[in-house]
Amino acid sequence: MGRVGKGVLFQRTIPYILLAPCLVFLFCFKFLPIIISFRESFLSPLYLGHGFIGLSNYLDLFTDPTFWNSLKVTFLFNLIITPFQITISLILALLVNLKLRGIGLFRSVFFFPVAVSMTITTVLWGLMLNPQSGLLNAILKVFMIPEQPFLSSPNQALFSIIILCSWKGVGYWMIFLLAGLENIPQEVYEASVIDGANRIQTFFRITLPLLKRAITFVVVADTVINFLLFAPIYLLTRGGPTGSTNLLMFEAYSNAFVYANVNRAAAVTSILLIIAAIIAVMEFKIFKPEFEY
Amino acid sequence: MNQTKKKRTSNARSIIYYLLMSIIAIMFLIPALWGISGSLRPRDEIFRYCNPISWRTFISENFNLEAYQEIFTDEVILYTRALLNSLFISFSAVALGLFVNSLAGFAFAKFSFRGKNLLFILVVFSFMIPFEIIVIPLYIMVKAWNLIDTYYALILPAVANGLAIFLFKQFFEEIPTSLLDAARIDGASVPTTLFKIVLPLSKPVIICVALILFLGQWDALFWPLIAVSRNDMIVVQVAIARFWGEYSVEWGNILAGSTFAAGVPVCLFLFLQKYYVQGIVKTGLK
Image (cartoon, rainbow over all chains, first blue to last red; front, side, top):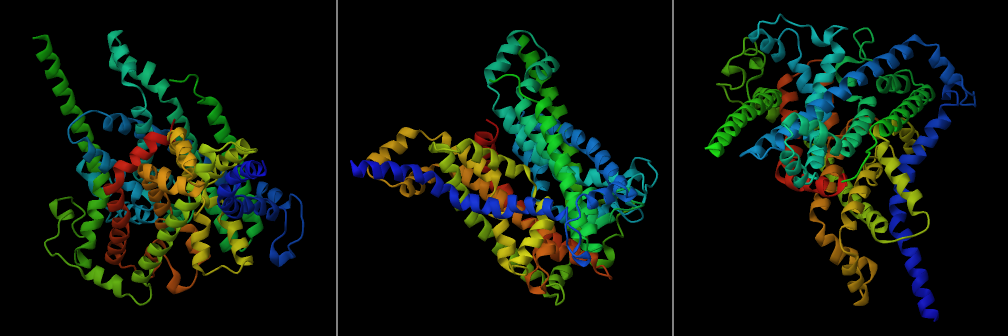
């Protein structure tokens, strides 16, 4: 009797023992930093005594035109890049899902930039985008398009960043969408062919709705990643020209490590986190899968 | 008759598909090919053949490894050391991460316990928090714990990974519970069951998680840039950023350093891509 009881107790504690290391790590390196970040955002910087100052950091931000510009740039960037990347990666996923000979080669080609780091992507594209000696203007020349200033123009810098991020990013989302496509049972397609649906009808009436779950995941994850883009801005534009690429994550970095005001930076990241969370929840609601298969 | 006609249209269609995919593939490959060729030519030649475009843009007549020689012997930016550092922290994170996350995934997949749903929601929430956003508070913490300029600062934050736990959980759920019950009746302990029965059946998800963890570490820039300032502790991405930030920029060195640093994960992914895709298909989106 006692032995059985002991066995049950052991069974009950086992999942907690299995989870313990992971939870400790998650707490220390994910949740604790967020709690600290919120706390720091209500304190004054070290050189001003590090005392509680309520919402001052936030109020300061809301009266700072640099912050508002940064917020505007971040939203503009996301409004363009997320739909753009998801459309491209959906097209790529549909293409590499075709049963054609040698399709694995194309899959690899579209996917390899995922393994290239953001730093290297940025360096490579930085050289390609050079207005005078870069390869991109040479390619445009072949198509009779005049030389473009790219990163040195406030009108084109953000779009240049979008192109370089998409080169690296779309292959990653392609794999998730491809996984979604491969999980759609073949019989569904066969049924739609028997019903006389053409390709376009099949795509919009069958593929797209059944892909909703994968698309939801990709939309939310892509949004969060794009909201927090840092490396290309840090390496290429430093927020310029004239603040046109000053994304919030870089604004946070500047506050913390250029102006040595970690608390103001904490306020920026707290705002970013809240915005990203709100948008993610909204996206989950909008794209919520309506049925199972 | 009808069938041959159908076949022909599908052939025409596949030619269009091939053409379309080839154009996209070229767009994907151009930056990489240009970068690799730039790293293999004399440095005064890197931009010379860019404009107008010709075969010379991508292939050099004067094959040259000078840039590689230089980065591996550079005494200011210790590139070789950075490679070794990156290898070390990446493998450490993979080893620790596989262990810790598989334990957690196993608990979520095969046990029922109080607070399970809440804990799982926390895990999912944690992978919605990207690393970049916690870099600044993490810096404050790591500084308080005196871990700045240590390998711990680079490795430990990357160990627990919500996505990894999620993938393990989904994969383990597919393993029949009857198999585990049989093992328990035979007297196998929980660790034995996990390590001798469950994990050997989970090759795709193990490789998938290992790749995710490896890439996360190998490609990290923001956190190592801040957490480590000692010259002999830099990681490979920081080394490249430093090549880039120097006052007299040696483009050849940057391209050589980038080619080498990108080559490692690209080769890994190309060899293991099958498992990666399988891992995600079988788990991630069900």
